[in-house]
Length: 424
Image 1 (tube, rainbow, N blue to C red):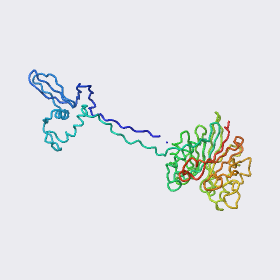
Image 2: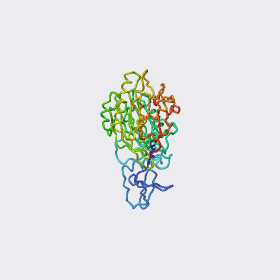
Image 3: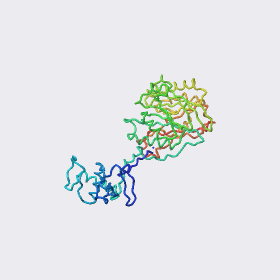
Image 4: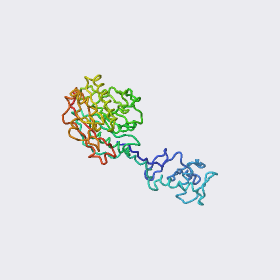
């Protein structure tokens, strides 16, 4: 993320109204000069003094220059410095500074460097240093190789592990933000379904470091039912997307009646348009985060949530392009709960109407969560978009190979991606 640097400003010691002089030419200080009468008769001169010296001109007999108190002090100071003689004051004056014994007060001695520097008799005034440039609050970026292309629609799902929480997840929050930034910008996918975003302000800060992207969090006021379903302090789902590819036209929370089954995280539904080749294709993206853990009770909640989602999709979105990226917290061949079938059997058996393109990953034995053997982050797609799917494109992206201490600094989940041909 780069910030503007402030620069110091040099300070001029000459009068704001004065005029610079070149060489030995005198400088006039209209408000800071004094006249001293020297000589008598026709040879009298009015000597005009300033901080840089004295100049004279003939004056009519009897004419005495008018002194100005403020100008006299500075001018007389310069004269005394040049001649070494005490300076007569223009009248009684209360002075609280100590007397130096030379006819000059300590306060006036302290002005000597100012007078000498103004006349060019000393070193030029050094610029007053400005404040130190504010460091970038984020660590230096790490290069992550791109996976997305301009000719395809690239979709990812990623659990951000309590992003923005001060008590859970990675302890170094700026570092976690920086690494999430690096992965999203480097991967170059068009849209990301994200889970476990705790802080709305942290999400906003993240977006400010993602040029070309925008995002929406489940508790945003623009999300119908969002603030009622998600509080500020709990983990939330959201969508991050390229503004050049995706337009969000509406957002709402669905299946709020299954709040318990979804572990307090009902799905976020977004109406979008995918823009490729000048063609805008409408679609629905649903981001979900299912109940975690291997206990039988958790499995039962996942199964009930899956049944409710399947019923909703069949009834409300049967003929639409639908994509469901999420942390499903279970695999789709068999469950992480010992002795149980996958809780997502209703979708697996509904092919080709509903398909997990990420089933390819389950078949290869890779994992999407560090320390486990299963793929629990999946993307579900409707048959309306599956003809555009590029077979073999499903990927668990091992960004942990590029980010040191990935699990402690970034997340325990790895991004999962799928690719579709441009919808035009």
